[in-house]
Length: 387
Image (cartoon, rainbow, N blue to C red; front, side, top):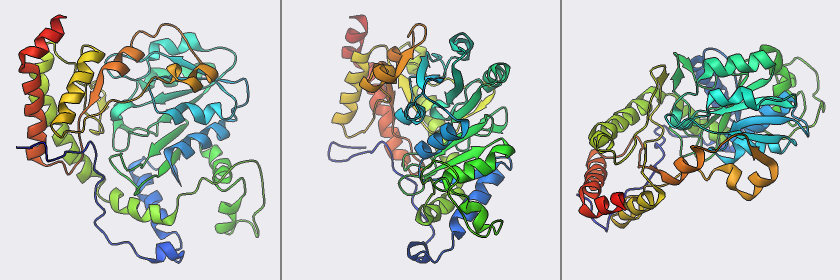
């Protein structure tokens, strides 16, 4: 049993098991780890071209550059997401058009996208929250109908599937994160860009290498590399690659352990949902998630904050999540919300995430569960519910 002197963190990155050759730091590694990562990822992602990047934010910026976002273009996306889902496109001058999310998956509501499209719409960005897929079939059909680009922010999606297809591989561009808070990490930051259009690969390689054709030079296709267009440096370091390679060789094992812990939370807290105290995650039949997040939605912000403080007081680091982007200072400047905000702000104000990582001890998870059960069985909670 835990006590106030102990502490259960919200997240602990999976430790690196293999030793890292110091040649990767000295530069003598010749990129072998990054090459190995790209090969492993391509095998896991249906053979598509994978470019490793310093972060998912960099991948999103590369997709905006590749699409050719210009000032005045519009990009449709959810407001319930991390800031770089939006800023990568706003940096290119796009107007951000936020639409509401679904109350079941917390993903963009696909039924609202088509009405938000105008002659200025250049792209749709979907975000697979908690590694649970958006309704990609209908979204992809809408984008094809209007000939607009589709980008998957699959930052949380490694090892997750939509109708047996890996997240990040369905749209024109897929962006994955290997931040240390993700299921698979590269030691701190890290990302990948998946390119579904073979004809776009050469340009994306140029964008990755500071706007030069250095990738072709390294393959011996040109005798020197030159500046081709405006871009920046979007190359993952070999040190990041070394950590990531260790993780990628254990993807199935890591996700399997996380899924077991996710399922244990769900089973033991289901009575709270049946009693109407909370709402648990909803996983559509066509989605295979990766146990990236275990969250609950409380009846109100007051009750969410009360539970959060209760858990903090007994050494459990639960946490909230996104502040809706359209309510932020930058959001008010660079965006507008299309239609009614029926779910986005309400859910953001009442969502709470529980500690979940593959090394979470069974005893500590049991303590978290019993503590939550105790909170909901306390008569003071019922007074709050009736207020």
